[in-house]
Length: 255
Ligand SMILES: Nc1ncnc2c1ncn2[C@@H]1O[C@H](COP(=O)(O)OP(=O)(O)OP(=O)(O)O)[C@@H](O)[C@H]1O
Ligand SMILES: Cc1ncc(C[n+]2csc(CCO)c2C)c(N)n1
Image (cartoon, rainbow, N blue to C red; front, side, top):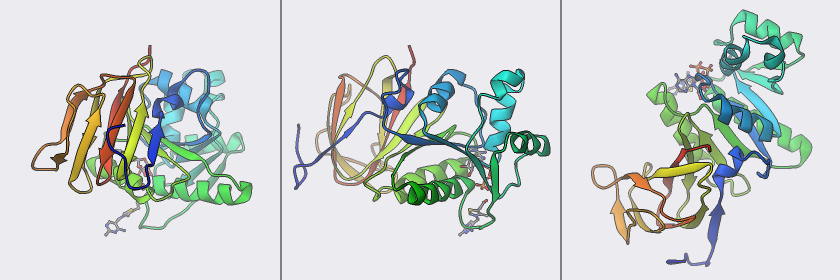
């Protein structure tokens, strides 16, 4: 390891496990957001690897539209629950999932997005089950910029929940938040890479890394100065030490 934090703790990550075909990933709850499902292969892998599948309001239209060409295929993608303010789900989509006995719950608070309402739903389920699940949300990022920032903000809101991880999966990327401290990211070349980025979105961060094409040594990164974009994985294990939370993103590359 390059450097260690005061407690000598290193956080280990292998986020691309969620896309593995062998289902070796830790249990997670998949939350489907309202963006087009274009990469069906990665969507299928996430669906199959998930323990629960919750849909944020208009995300239901996206599943329906992606698979409606074949009723048998459509019937393979029945979520556990649809939740949100329900201003986006189309009537025929609602009827379809109601006919499949899916619980559809309306929540109208005006301070939380429908993505956040699905996170609240998971917390309710966890209380019942006495177990915590990681969260994988897809298709996340892209589309409306305010929604994209709301999803990144959710990573920051959840960062102190040390028992769970939150992973955003967009068409081309896996994105997570690394809290201040030392991290090892285990990369799988059959699932991800080569391009990656480390972005100090919440505040400036001083970074030391090992395993990247452009490594950093005590380098201050900040908006208005250096932000490590278009970097590349150069080793199976990436080591990162940061004094503030940073966003890690890596390109999906299924082989
Ligand atoms: N245009 C978009 N770009 C990126 N993400 C989106 C977009 N629209 C929706 N989402 C994500 O999908 C979730 C469900 O979307 P929904 O169908 O409720 O649309 P919305 O009513 O515009 O969203 P919200 O009510 O959460 O502001 C949102 O909470 C957000 O995380
Ligand atoms: C300061 C502030 N800015 C924006 C909103 C609006 N808003 C944020 S999340 C949400 C729910 C969307 O379904 C809405 C309407 C707010 N409440 N407070």
